Image 1 (cartoon, rainbow, N blue to C red):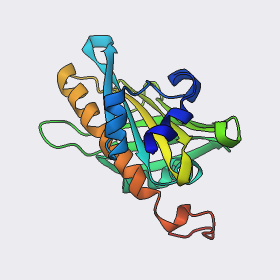
Image 2 (cartoon, rainbow, N blue to C red; image 1 turned 30 degrees about the horizontal axis):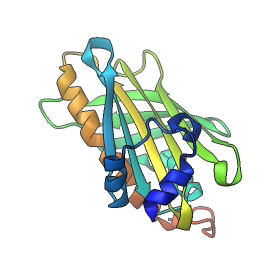
Image 3 (cartoon, one colour; image 1 turned 90 degrees about the horizontal axis):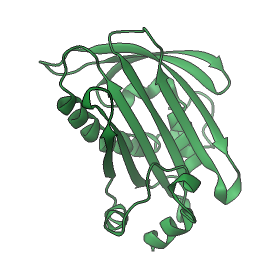
Length: 210
């Protein structure tokens, strides 16, 4: 059963697995039914909270990671993202400029992020990671940071976790920002789930495949 597979992937604690939290029994039942589990962290600056979400995705972690590091195509699956421009910094680092198109009365946002990715460990203990953070002073938002962690499960599935913190600045109330973050997290997980099925992320796909 999937719950057994998740338990095996979490032999010690959330810190061991690189996940933001250990799912409760009730949350594990939701994961077993394909749902995303979302939690909001304690209040930070001005009442803003970091969102944390976990879901089981039906692709192996290496394939999902290929989709995550393909920053040039984020506008195909990231909520509200209308345009992106990427500048490679190193083999496993890049700066990404993003433009968010938001519905009125919310104002559009644009900014630059620094993204870094790596793989921890190897074999069954491998953890695929990607972390991003706002480039200070860029665009019209105060702060934006987050992280993806992918943990391999049996039968080519993955336990995927995402952390997300946004401080849009301006006069947005904290409750509204927290609500947007909580709603966006399941969309991000589902977007990654769908994006990873594209042929370009198959290890057999030639360079430039769509």
